[in-house]
Amino acid sequence: MRTIFLGLEIARKALQAHQAAMNVTSHNIANANTPGYTRQVPHLLQETVPLSGLFVPPHLKNIGLGTDVDEIRRMRDKFLDLQIRQESRTGAYWNTIDKGLEQVEVIFGEPGESGLSQIFDRFWNTWQELAKSPESQASRVLVAETGSLLAQALNHTYMQLEAQRSELNEEVAIKVQEVNNYIQQIYDLNQQIVRVAPAGGNINDYKDQLDVLIENLSKVLSVQVKENQNGTYTIVLQGRILVNDRERSFLSLSPNAPGMYEVFLENGPRVDFTYQNGELKAILDLRDVIVPKYQEALDILAMGLRDAVNTVHRMGFTLEEPPQRGGDFFIGDGAKDLAVNPEILENPEKIAASLSGAPGDGENALAIAQLRGRPVVSGSTPDDFYRGIVSRLGVEREEAQRIAKNQELLVQQLENRRESISGVSLDEEMTNLIRYQYAYQAASLLVRTIDEMLDTLVNRIR
Image (cartoon, rainbow, N blue to C red; front, side):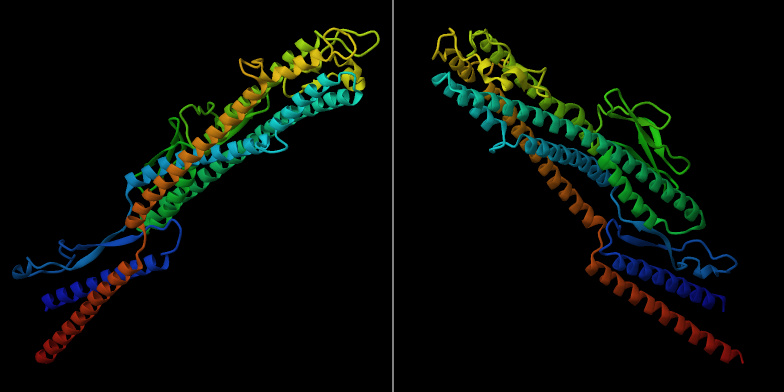
């Protein structure tokens, strides 16, 4: 009789195990299109430990005691996850750099009618025309106005770059807040796992959410990720715990002397971004290195142009009576505040177009026009120096785009590999569902068979 009940127990456990397996399969099918979901697989384990309180006759001791769902596993490749986080972070860095350089290109506006190249051409050409008719008031006014237009274009370009730096500074604050939000959400999910896991609850869905958050966080910062034995995660930045199942530590901001934000660990040191990667590093590089580099180049251009034109201009004579030595044509200390001397704007006769002071002499205006072909800006002509700035910008953007594209392709390949492991295949799930259904039906048939055996046995005893 007891052996019959043993068979009934085996059948019962088979029903439960395959019912659980079908539930897992149903869960997979339901989440086939859920972003971040990881395919789950029931691990069926044969029972080898005698059931408590159940006598097993010696001749049946070699017979198995059925099956049970040992655990429900998430199909993840941890090394592949690590690769995706690393390569996605690199891709995020270069995508951010590319977008920043795109903004710089828009500011320079090259090639285009509003670009500095066109204004430089007009500036040199007006001096050339003045050399032909040095006593023409119209030509003098045009020289002054075109010089002012060139100075304003340099001012505007410089200040737009400065505005971009301010926007990038605000993006630093936004990204730090984003990181802190991720830290809080990871902490909350860790707490959920700590509460659910000891009671035997399934924490797989919580871990899926954690994986998505950690992947998003890893695009912003270079962090170290460790999975703990209880299923929670520990996130470390520069040797300091940002979050685990017991504590969390946020990032904070502090403005430096120029008003630019620096990133600090909460109640800790400044975050060292020297060996960092990701979106926040890219924003800081754009703000502190890349954009200022182009501002510095504009300063060099403006000061080189100012000094070269002023040097020649001071050698000439004005159209005033009597003719006076020319003063500075340009004033200012850089691209930010370069301007035509207000005295010249008020009185274009102060333009020193003559080299001798004699009527009809435009040699000094010609000498200024010829500066166009002279290496007066860091060993280059003004036009060549400016073209070099634009060319370097184009090369840097092209390189950023190339690397970003390569990273996108690499990440896509890695994600395809992960999808083959962790993704839900509806065909495969339907096959599993049919397989578990047949096993469940067989276990049901076993229950009915044993029930008939019991009925026969009881009737014989009667």
